[in-house]
Amino acid sequence: MTDPAPTSQDDSTVRECLARGRLEIDGRVLSASNATFVGEVALDGAAVRCVYKPVRGERPLWDFAVGTLAAREVAAYEISHQAGWGVVPTTVLGHGPFGEGMVQEWVETGPDELVDLVPEGQVPDGWRHVLDAWDGNERPVSLVHLDDPGLRRMALFDAAINNADRKAGHILATADDLLGCDHGLSFHTDDKLRTVLWGWAGDPLSDDDLDPVERMLSLLEGSALADLLGGLLSGAELSRLRHRLHRLRRCRAFPLPPTGWRAVPWPIF
Image 1 (spheres, rainbow, N blue to C red):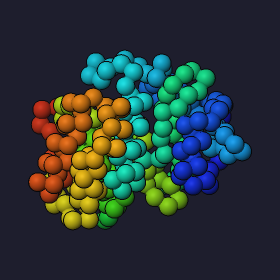
Image 2: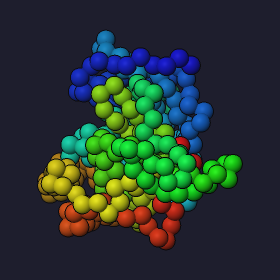
Image 3: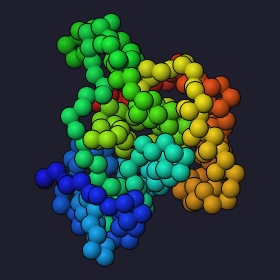
Image 4: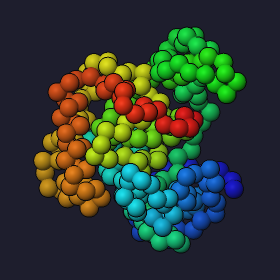
């Protein structure tokens, strides 16, 4: 499988193409937990490279309802897009050869290393410490990530949507920005935040940090976004989303790692 070429269409064209276009598959991501394909979707002369995850290819999980992961990914995009976080590629519910599923614009990434393991305690300048552990050779190491405003924005977004699966490999460094993928394990009613981006844990949130939180709370008061998300998430999940947003606004700080369950996803990378 060759790497897809980046697209240059505006967002509205990309979204329309992903939602209504004809999708042809030319590769599969074999390392993915759920059935994940790469292909191209075309509509009215426009073509967009994409990732396609059919609902029928979702692996059953004990803590998330069967067949809901695609909708959760779309909900994550809508919140990122409408609140102004801007950390999720354009994502829709579309159709492909294996039926309905999540269709997301392919993101061309660069070689940037954003999360790393270093000898224990040797945190480089401009990086943040997450945790200490042992590697596969039983050497003491520290997990670190870059102290970057794009990652900071992503960490707050993950706290809002209760992302249980922010692996290093789910962070996409583009030529211009940082984006995230694989948000299917989000919006659970229980607190399940698992992330490699704990470097800001407990740090205060600025007014700029909280702007998307305030915007999202305001949007949820209207019927349009609430109705849209209501078709993607359960009523209880929407209620907990509001609760987390209010908690971030009230506490004005990044959340702390939990003590009652694993705070980082596995595998980390």
